[in-house]
Image 1 (cartoon, rainbow, N blue to C red):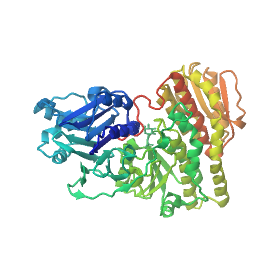
Image 2: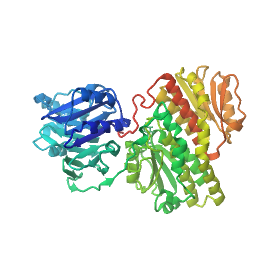
Image 3: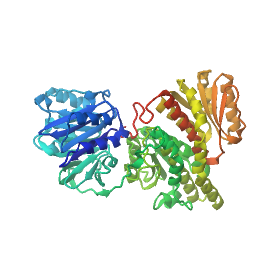
Image 4: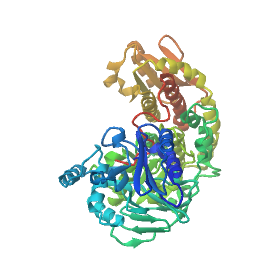
Length: 610
Ligand code: G6P
């Protein structure tokens, strides 16, 4: 992942680079750095703290320049230490640095290149795969940076987006991408590079999305792009209006808390003002596609994968179409049996997740051309790559742990379920009206669940002292248990696992003692009596049950059984409501443990490496 910003201008570009980095911190925050061309030499500042600290360092050291690059890192090769932070320099061996480079991605043949470059005298300062690119470009440099980058990229295996500049060519930054995102921002007598247009908001809204294999030459008044075959190409310039106003915290302690409380609005916006269900909500031609498919293949990672798992229950039960849900990173590398009459659905908050994009391409490569994405970013690669799409309206999600993105994905997936059912003659008018009514009521229903926060906070204080937790759910609430466990481990660092409650006796029951809290999702559905038996199995072994029960389940609190009542049972949409208390439990437990809730250790919001 990592975030890249680059600039060529006739003004000091350090504020633009630093502002860009702040907006890209969601891509990783293990370290950050900036390098500029300043009075004929390359200067840099690097920090293992957050961008705000780097900013103070830049000011203290009076770093400024008209040309520069910057980076925020999510460590792959080499610890998050200053010497591994980007930008990397090359040429110091010869006295002064000549090449400065930042990189996003992974170079798979870096060991071989490192040995080769060491043999010709390059001394490595870091453990990164990135440093080999800087030295390789320096080694190949013969007076033209663009040519050196072109030659160097031919030697690289793996995925990368890079931005590089050279001491000897002060008004030039060269960028290249292969498998990792990179955009160009056009200005008037100034040009920019970034791994996400968001980084350039407020600087320019004229954005070019580079394609795989592109190399771009950025000068003051020129943007020249050469494609993978070495041909000069024109790429469309998009006017992209990016909303950066999500930054205000308001009365909340963290963005995650704010985003949890934004869910009534986010879900409402995702539903827009839908009057009736029609496949065309997913794009032109959707009816024909939905009508002519045999099955669905849902591909996603992380929280988005759990949204997919939930959707399988809905689609198979309501639209009666078989669904497979696969973790994208597994699907892309396994032998599978393709069916051209499959609808491939990707789910992604960011629309940039490397594994999901690669899985999508893999599916297409196997002849499955019907593609649809549920995505939160309308300008993302995922939306551009899919035939059909539905844009969730969660708004920018800053907290690394996904909350409103998940519930809006579920909302969109429920709409997809209804649209598939309708296209296949399985949705009567009455049913459509009833489901639409339930959907429209969702924001209010979520609001009522959010009001449970004080009760959940009391539980969180007890959870904060634990090191393990189990989450149980059944049926369509099993994926919600998975999501609840993921939230808790991501931000509180408590080891948490989720199981379908019926599976407990096949192994995990061995873990249950009086020290093991067992969170149970107990909606009033057809599996409730079975679930109650599973709860007894825990109770009999001394386990402490924490139950989120629908109002009319008749599960009462007693010794070792703590119950919080959900305001109402919500039928098929119940998984959306049962997600909310689990988010709040994870959030308040993390707060009680004093972790960095919005930026949990080792994680990143957008994962653009495989
Ligand atoms: C990262 C994030 C998760 C997210 C996953 C998939 O791991 O931390 O919150 O669920 O990526 O991201 P996507 O943008 O594809 O939904």
